[in-house]
Structures are given as C-alpha cells and as structure tokens.
Length: 99
Image (cartoon, rainbow, N blue to C red; front, top):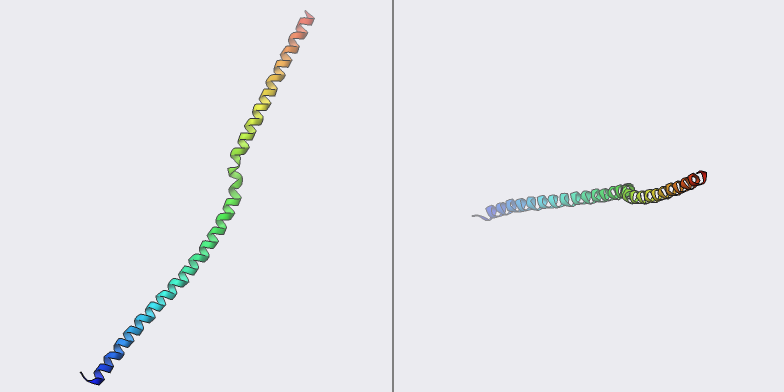
C-alpha cells in the first residue's frame, strides 16, 4: 500500500466517522427538542388537570350536602311528629271538654 492509498483510506474513514458524529449529534438534538416539547405539554396538561379538579370539587361536596339535607329532614320529621302529637292531645282535650 502506498502512502497515497493510505491517505485516501484515512480520508474515507474520516468522512465516515464525521458522518456518524453528525448523525449522532442530529439525533441528540432531536431528542432534546422532543423532550422540551414533552415538558411543555406536561405542564399544560398539569394546568388543565388543576382546572378540572377545581371545577369538579363541588361534585365531591354533594355527598356532604346530601348528609346535611338528611339531617335537616330528620329534624323536620321529628318536629312534625311532635306537632301531630300535640294536635292529637289538644283534640282529645277538646273532645273531653265537649263531652
């Protein structure tokens, strides 16, 4: 092999190595850009998720509202029962006075 051939092969392999380095750098740059886009989309998704949580928080409070309404209904029923008992007692008292 002559010196000319050695230089020729050296430049060929140098070009191949340079092409590999350029390809690797391109892939790395692409990965960084895509990772940045993913991070931006993740932040947007997190903001939307927080909005959804704030907008649906009242739905989770419906169970508490139902419990309070049942408590109020129980109290109203007790008041009604007492009123009926008082009315019955007064009716009996008036019936006894009339008799």
